[in-house]
Image 1 (cartoon, one colour):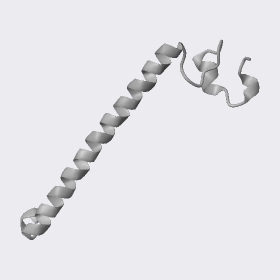
Image 2: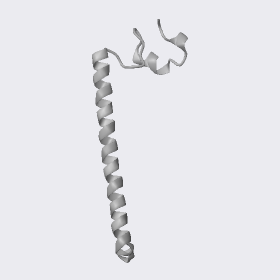
Image 3: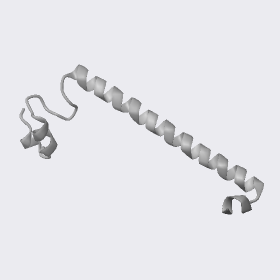
Image 4: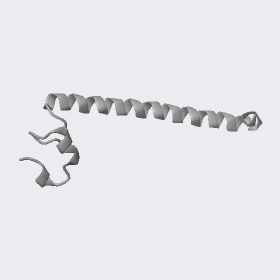
Length: 72
């Protein structure tokens, strides 16, 4: 196998790099989960999703690109 042909120092270095990348991905996913939970909690306390005007349905908010489309 190609892995066994590499010098020991390279194998160690590559293993450390792969472990660091895997750990980074775990932390990134955990961070995204925490941010998602905070936003969801804030939206529940706020009473409506952020970016949605009062009296506006989620469908209207999704297609509202012009301030004239939003009810005031």
